Length: 285
View 1 (cartoon, helix red, strand yellow):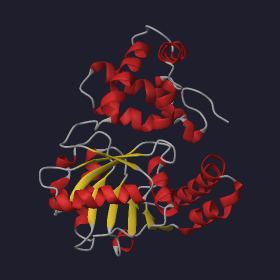
View 2: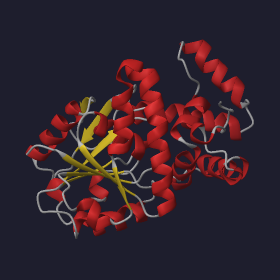
View 3: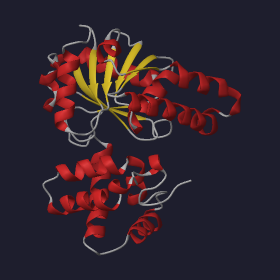
């Protein structure tokens, strides 16, 4: 099977990036979200991504392509319409198991029979969601990193039920989308990237809420000591503090629970969500 028509569910920071990059690569893309306000915000994100692609990806020579991409994506709040011609559905709704389960139950009842399903979940194994789709043999995970145009990995992870042909179709799609496919041989919480990244972020959270070091000290130490371009709290800002809070809140660790509360009180409740809002642990122009 060849993927031509993509539907992205959820138009937040990463959902918008997935939709835009796929459209930029030539796929027909429909992006769905739950409300008119969310869809309007997505349109704004697509225009901002066009600015980014002009400056970071292609230069002024191809500016018309970036602008055309921003307006080529179909936006809708009607799930049935969004799914009508989908060859592949990528779900990027909030990292909440109940929301994801409900979404896949609805999608499984409406999507065409040939449609392949993929979750972009960074923390949930696809096996925990597959049965809600009604077609587990066509379900897998395709996980993208933030700043998809530069950090262009696509981690592809199936379950014991995923058909091999479906897995290979996902790999081929990722390549055509401009990604570097990272094929996992079996399920692993955190895939490859987050298996490496999450312990760093967890350790940074512990240093902060435990009162051992402040944000700037933690980041400076990591950058100087490793040569990395970003410290962990700068990475948190890119990931988004809402996502970071949801992941921490779902943890059984008391330290992570404390970190979730810290994020909510000091940042999320004040509208400081990271780079997407211009302020998180740091301020951005």
